[in-house]
Image (cartoon, rainbow, N blue to C red; front, top):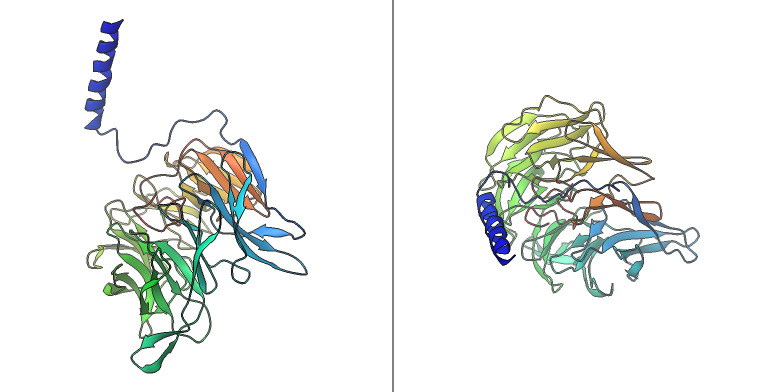
Length: 416
């Protein structure tokens, strides 16, 4: 028996060494294997109401570093209940904690989870840092009333609404003011201690901020009434390069290919692959997309949705269309098998790479709420409920598989 054990050990070890250099391991994905109970509801969580009618915000759920699920809810009838952040235990859907009320009645960003588990959210003019163990606010940062400006001895009025939260490589929080009103907009960096590290005046749009493979901050903003896609130094906020780009005010995300190149819109129908070192164009292509949300699967295909024709996919190598248009709803995310999760009014469907339906979930869910955890559970929300559904894969670990890149909503290429 001892001899047999030694022989088996040698076979296993040699097999590991032979696999380590082969082409079977393409990327960091470990999607797992199909589960016989795929699509089953594991639990349903209902928002604790008290004497109020509370509704979950139509933003992506977030999955914490320990698997906790986070959402925001608010509501009421005669007396409106401001937004709070809620934490749900992954094992049974029970409430873990809820925060004190946030500012006013709504949230202005995705819920973002840092590497150490700290939870961050923007609400109107404030950034909140939340302890993941208790839900207590670690600190609250507020937009300054004025900021130093060379043309204004008493400072430029800067108090306004913030949005577009992203997590920098070192844990700093990057966001910008972009609401309505007469005030100077700025791009901000706040450290993990709640102190502002830098700011830069901008003409802002509400589109999200992305952190690239090199830690550089990318966003759509403007200078002197000209719109740009800008690259900024994460340590100082200084502009490294900029190229003209106009995508309107909305939800146009800047994505990153596996080698670090940017895939982003430069106009409403003009998609480009961009060298992150200097902003030079690698290619530019006319594409069909009615909402300008970009996903990239683990094979490098760029996936976009057009309301008139369905899913279009383009090569990330040259921008050419793949030749196959899938007449399926808009995709919320892509898993490690390359399957697309498309939300409908009464549930969601999961499609294989060729457009055939794999499995479905029936139950009202928000299109933007869906996330997939590393242990193959799909979480979605609508109304006053969060659903945990048995999946058969994790979110893809390469490409850009979700609007905010990952289930922690970091908008950071290097985070998972």
